[in-house]
Amino acid sequence: MRAHRASSLTVRHNSQARARAAHAFLRRVAAPAAAAALLAAARLLAAAGPAVVSVLATAPASAAAAGAAADTQRIERVLSQTPLIDGHNDLPWEIRERFGGDLSKVDLAVSTRALPAPAGSPPLMTDIPRLRQGHVGAQFWSVFIPVEMTGTQAVQATLEQIDLVKAMCARYPRDLAMAYSAADITRLFKAHLIASLIGVEGGHQINDSLVVLRAYYDAGARYMTLTHSSNTDWADSATDMPAHHGLTRFGEEVVREMNRLGMLVDLAHVSEETMRAVLRVTQAPVIFSHSSARALVDHPRDVPDDVLHLVAQNGGIVMVNFAPPYVSEARRRWAADRVAEQARSNSPPFGGLYIGQPERIAAALKAWDDAHPQPPVTLTDVADHIEHIRQVAGVDHVGLGSDFDGIPETPTGLEGVDRFPALLAELARRGWSDADLAKVAGANLLRVMSQAEAVSARLRTTRMPSTATLKELDSPAGQPGR
Image (cartoon, rainbow, N blue to C red; front, side, top):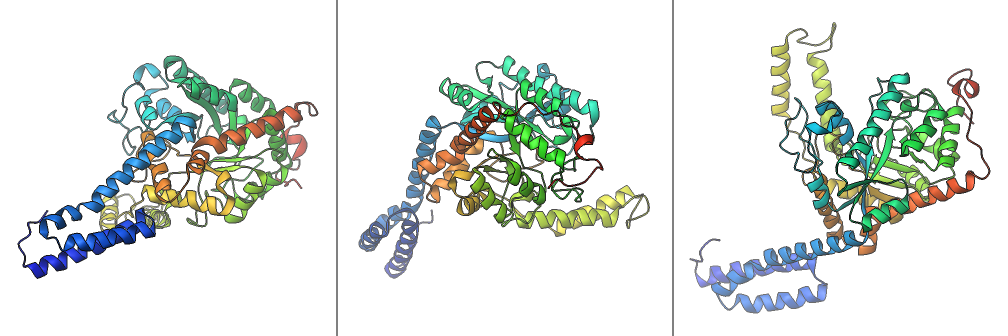
């Protein structure tokens, strides 16, 4: 802090400026009446001289620290009573890619931050100490496989990933335990264990078979994302060209069978037409395990407002994704421009300014990067999406779906699974009540899961397991169901 070496007039001027600054701060953290009273006190203290002014100047920082401490206590209180449930984490695939799926080669009981990462990949974002620091009460582990894996290869790889999740729980029984129902999550939370659930991240993983779908449910999967980055034979993806304009008849049957089983229908990654088609067919609440608000970022992976209204009518939930291009419009446009620049330099086999010249390609991209700094993305951008979904769909229809270890980078402030409380603290600073913080943390997902289980219990008394096939329902192939 600078020493006071000014004339009494300068001191008085500076004191008044600090008093005004203190008042501006207090207007944000205190009731207006209290702020006015404190301003009057500040003016009196300003006249008392530099020593008192120096003390006064620290008041905003002290008040901010006190406010942060209070927010931390609030969040800890909320998360001691409600399990924080993350809708999507891709650690199992990272273990497969980096360690050959061999848990003996990675110890999740200690920090994984410093483990070597493949070129172009970030450090791991997940380990048990950080899950504990983040107060994570339940985690949906994605058993993702790439869309390039198809047929029986896809089924085998999916079963291997399911087995890996169960192996994680077996290796760390004091921290992780398998969960298959909302009641399991609540029971394990009370036992201070992290409930581990399984999500299948793509309809391509069932090999167009309802028998395989049922086998995944029996193996523990409690949601399936209907598509990943490409269309399936029966549903359109958000990031592919439309083939079915939503669901085919077999796609509708997949949704009905998932309702009967009690498997949550996950609409992350599907096209807008598929979202609407599912919401017409489903009898149970849906989830978006890791998506954000399209009104804020015009990315096809995000959810438009009219669909948010439909989700509210359905009783479902949108679990907000942390991927920077999905939560920041500036970052989305920057990323698109960078891809265009890469194509301009190198579009094999015949396109690009510097095709076949790797040194010139690298130099051109570096020059572009130097001239176009990457727009920052922070925790507050994610909070904006949560607030928007709350405003449009209601506080009962929003949750958290980080996509940790499935994204190449994170927003500043959300670097790993230990950072969930910081996001809730930001919502607390924005005026969220404890009850609403509990809903976004996990209570909403528990409700959705319980309701899907109730729908399943009813349907199992009236509907037999479906024997429908893609060929039977969609011949000729590609005809949309109506």
